[in-house]
Amino acid sequence: MSVQVIVGAQWGDEGKGKIVDHLSENVDIVARYQGGANAGHTVVIPSRNGKTEKEFVLHLIPSGIFHRHVTCVIGNGVVLDPAALMAEIGQLNQMGIKTEGRLLISHNAHLIMPYHKLLDSVREKGDQKIGTTGRGIGPAYIDKYMRTGIRVVDLLDRDVLCKKLKRNIEQNNELLSKMYNSQELDVDAIIGEYQEFDQKIDEYVTDTSLYLNEAIRKKKKILAEGAQGALLDVDHGTYPFVTSSSPTSGGACTGLGIPPTAVNSIIGVVKAYSTRVGNGPFPTELSDETGNRLRKIGGEYGATTGRPRRCGWLDLVSLEYSIRVNGITRIAVTKLDVLDDFTEIKICTGYKANGKLLRQFPTDVQTLDVVEPVYKSFEGWCSKTSAVKKYSGLPRQARKYLEAVQKLLKTDIWMVSVGARRDQTLVVR
Ligand code: GDP
Ligand code: IMO
Ligand code: MG
Image (cartoon, rainbow, N blue to C red; front, side, top):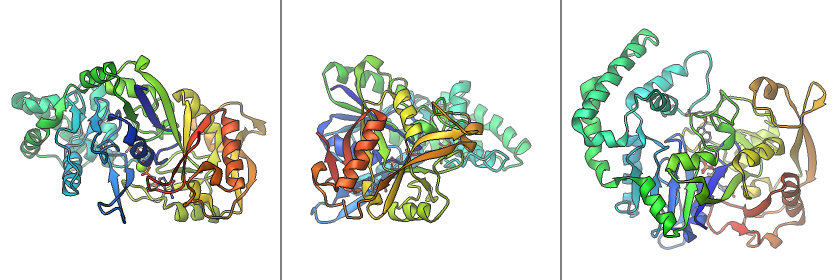
């Protein structure tokens, strides 16, 4: 194996952090390829005495950081908020997790600026609310594609940074005051703040594409960690209710500067039911007591914003699509234990629109808003799975549920997660 890509197969929060942390035991490098601090990847690690656990939510640093032998890379495709990064590094260091020499940041990654966050929040006050995380992601990617963005490398040259920042802040101040009637930003204060980051970030910055390609040549094992999920992809998701990057597997190559030929496995992380946070279509959403139960048992509240996640049954129509656009070779099913107490569990196997069965997942929101899910019903197992150690030890009904998913999706299930801890992971041989 050289590069294995880990993608969220739904609308994010599938448990990518847990799966990446679990797999990190056997890899050399974990590299994030897109998104920014909109991500919240939860990792539960045993304490030093091994008796208790600690939960840590990573926003920018790859989920392999808790394995001391792993080098973590933040690729060029990520939009980096230096304030969020420094806070995360500080928290990790405080816990005794070393980042020096183990964290590499691409010199080509774009920076999130205070005006990106401000623009994100004022835009969300308009008519078409996406329900963003407010982390400045959309505006930062706009600047990247407008070719006016500021990159990590620009921090290294004081004059270039001042010139670019001045131009951007002046332009954005005009936009903020004239269009959004919002307060203007102080150019000098921002320049001062970002020059301070320069000194702190300097030791981590390098040509990460070169580093990764060298590692591929040396046959190192690399995990490419996606943020968000395929249905939030700017090209393949439920546009416009998407994020502004490419969480699908193709994004791993552009976001890290590695060739597609280096990728030999694509793992789709699939939650055993569905959730979505923010606005946009969600065909299997349950706005009833069952949805509330899923939220409560699954602890479905955003790891970044704390917002309650919308919950619903597993949706195989969107998953079949996700497997296709990502080229998913194997699946890791998470949070199976959340379904432990349900007497009946449903899977959506088709969509109907105007009385007709749809053959493919429609990505236009007008159609998605009106489709009616067709369900297949399964008997629940009504017993605890969180202490199960082997796939064969799962209740018969749980295996039946998983095997139906595998068969209908024509894709092998490789792992089943029955709890947030590392040891609550069953590998299916
Ligand atoms: P990510 O963004 O895909 O990394 O997922 P999040 O961290 O946002 O959300 C997943 C949540 O589920 C976190 O609180 C995890 O600790 C938790 N989790 C992960 N796997 C399991 C599991 O198998 N069972 C349960 N009960 N919780 C899990
Ligand atoms: P992880 O990596 C779930 C959603 C937001 C909103 C849309 C656009 O933890 O799975 P943005 O701030 O990116 O412009 O918001 O995308 N969103 C996520 N939903 N998990 C995430 O990340 C998300 N990151 C963004 O809620 O609907
Ligand atoms: Mg998350």
